[in-house]
Image (tube, rainbow, N blue to C red; front, side):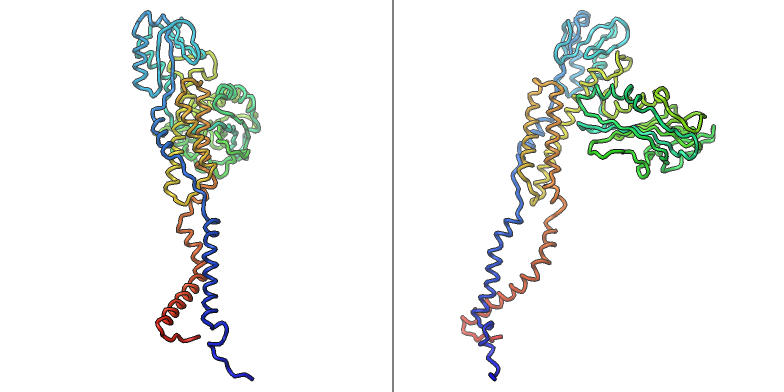
Amino acid sequence: MDGPRNPSTIFFQYERIRRSIIASYWIVIILAIPLWWQTTSIERLSLPSSEVYAQAEAHRGFQLPVRIILDSEFTKRDNSLALEVQTVLKDSSALDIRVSGSSGRSEGDSYLVLPSESQEIRVEGRELFFPLEKASASVLAKTLASFILPDKDHRVVQYSPRYRLSFSLLNEDSSGGQVVEAWDASNGIARHIEPITSALSVLHNFTIESQAQFYAPLAFEPLKLSEDEAYGLTPEQLTVFVNSAEWTLSSSSSNDPVLHFLLFVPSASRRPLKILNKEGKPTNSNSFLIPQWGGIVIANLPESPSKIRLSTDDLKSSFTTFSQQLLTLLGVPRLSSGAVRSRQQPTGWQIDALLRYRAIENVVRTSDTLRSTVSLVEQIPNMPVGEKVRNDVRDALKALKSLSSSSNMTLTGILATSRDALTLSQKAFFHPGMLALLYFPVEHKYAVYTPLFASAIIPLVVAAMREVVAWRKQRRGVQVPQG
């Protein structure tokens, strides 16, 4: 039997073999680096940042043309009336308003102010009938401003091409007696809501739904009033009136924004339920509006049978209130004080004012969204920017540039272009490929890769360093021990 062998003669102890093994590991690692870099690299195309910022500055002065023609009867009484009205309106407007005197009917997108045969201000289509006796520059300008320059209202919802209108009958507690078993919501919607949705179809597509619930408890206890055994809702309680935890207010699944309209029937033990003012006194109103959300009407039913069916006539007051709340939420400007209209639908003046308001809103939101997209990409170096994102940004910019020549476009065309620009900018900002790394900073990469590769790399580095030291000693003639 052979004796023990010299460790230096064992094949894996040969310096050449040992160093070849270590070198082979490093060769594999070095060759794999380009493949790893290719498979882990992100596509990051350049965005037209300079154009985005330039367009944002250009559209700060974005103006829409408004042409108003005063009938010759007005200019006969005061030759400078048109100029004075234009000056007053321009001082308080970001619109390109031109007022001129002429006779005849309005043409194209212009508005015509005609003398009224009575003392009332009447609106028909795109025509305004105004009493000659009241036609001073300040009074006429104030009236026109109420039609073409609606005040901004925080209650108005953000623009969306589509809305769902949800009408809900909510019985607080049907077990307490006197429950509303059914309501004629379809006729109420047809009479009071559909004329509005039809008139505003140039701005939005509406989907309407209705439902009834028999148990919709409040999340708080109304205040007991000493007088008439009534209950009251304080202004603070109105802000938390909707019990989102127990009320199922949406009966369908959709990504469209929803505007809710609730007919709330208090329990028989809590009637009448009144709305209180800041001083704690009952008000005459039985309805209130939740900004950018919807409206609520409280129905204090009289003593009647335990099961009730609300007819169209019973619902007339409630749906009239719902229609006014809908107009407010959608931003339809109110008519000036004392003005009347021939139909209950919004007038052409109101719809045009809303078209301008929404178009300007879309332009501002588009510019802000594009700036946010560019800023986000600049702040996060490893955020991917693909071809789809870059194309959406470019197309949004193209749509904004086309609005620069809006004098040749109708209001509906301007709104459609601004809507397309907003949609494209939001698609770029919320692209899934970008959002994936929005909350994944570089530190997370180190946390993932370090445990995976450190355990393998450290022994290889130590072994390579040991061999380099041994090789250098051998070159200097120093004997290096084996094993």
